[in-house]
Amino acid sequence: MRIIKIFDTTLRDGEQSPGASMNVEEKLRVAKQLVRLGVDIIEAGFPIASQGDFEAVKRIATEVKGATIAGLARTKDIDIDRAGEAVMPAEQKRIHTFLATSDIHLKYKLKMEREEVLDAAVKAVKRARQYTDDVEFSAEDATRSDWDYLCKVTEEVIKAGAKTVNIPDTVGYTVPQEFSELIEYLINKVPNIDKAVISVHCHNDLGLAVANSLAAVLKGAGQVECTINGIGERAGNASLEEVVMSLKTRPKFFNADTKIVTEEIYRSSRLVSKITGIVVQPNKAIVGANAFAHEAGIHQDGFLKERSTYEIMRPEAVGIPQSKLVLGKHSGRHAFRARLKELGYVLTDEELNNAFEKFKQLADQKKDIFDEDIEALVSEQVSKIPEAYSLVELFVSSGTKQKPTATVTLKVGEILIHRTEHGDGPVDATYKAIASITDTKSNLLKFEVKGITGGTDALGEVIVSLEEEGRTVRGHGADTDIIVASARAYINALNKLAVRRKMSS
Ligand code: KIV
Ligand code: ZN
Image 1: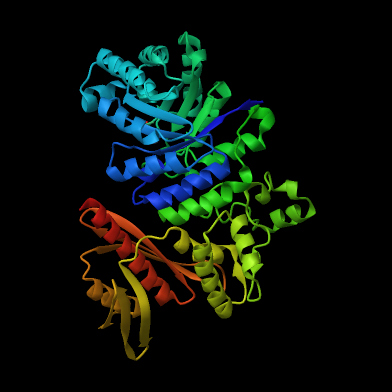
Image 2: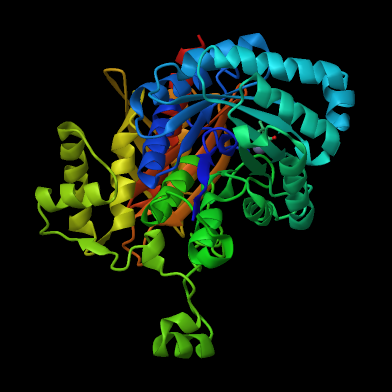
């Protein structure tokens, strides 16, 4: 059976999803989870794009072991050098350089002739090889390129030292039949194609990214580029979980598998969704809330008689927890730490103490504590950012005959500041008070509330997006009191803005 490499680009192309930007700590958490998931290559970012991207790639290259760390670069010298510097600390490092090969891109975007593009691609690969033997070249917009020209570029970059040649469907334009013919064409026409791995990178504009990737695998592609939950530019990229589980579920058909630890899929999906704030649609294949739910009576009847009547994969195979009830009021620190470990969180003693204290408070308010509750508690601990502001006290009054009023006390540096405001509702009053204390100029772009688990005592999670001078950040807050959760989310986002402001000053 062939083993297909999984090149995960959640941290690069995935991060290009509108509003999905992640800070360095968040990227590190995702990268560590990607290692547990067993991906072969982590594309950690685009180092030339910003100082933040450079830092993130470098930190991941330094701290994350167990996968190849790739940095993206255009063919410009400055890009290659920056990517080379960023991935340098990694045990296994890759530079991924790209240049468009379609006439549309050459004419309108690059204003270059075909010969010039060929020349730049070859030079870039050679320069990247000075930093690492593991160089990937991508022919951007390959699927709308002239096939013979694409063959020529592929041949020359392999001669120059590229070990992987990526054939991106940058605009999600191709269809499975055509894409498999293109891969076949390259295999037949590029004389040195056996010296490199053929990779595919499909976007989902027509909803065909996974189908196109699988069609290419059938023809001999040895690497698939994808993202967790299929997030990415515009309609997204091929979804990692769908590609992997297709191969796993149909081994005889594909005669190919991956090294992915499928039991880590669900956890990876949850983590990426939580960090990016991009909610997974309920009917999303593999990881959606309804992916394993049987609603129709006939289906339920068949399923109860024999699971395989209506189930082609086991939820356990992708790590969907079977028994979700985990801990309660009487659980000790030991059980709490063990459960956290199972969920993939390894905390320092101080973080564990803080999280355990919060867990006990929650256990007093809520009888049953679920994995999701625990994750909400610890995610605040592990993505800790310096706190310019912290919530000390919140008092809210509202009702059918009362003007909603909130009194908020925040610790700002070493000083306690109180403010009382009225609003259109208790959240509005609370936000006005916080805004007045912090004197923020930010705009609230998004405010989302969800119940993490069922029941009126459920932990509520609030996600807010704030914008200030072109910078967008997301804040999270969780509490059984939804107004407190709202306040925490707003303060979390304001703290992130304070960090960003400091970084750019
Ligand atoms: O979609 C694309 O073409 C890309 C390249 C940089 C590989 O993301
Ligand atoms: Zn892409």
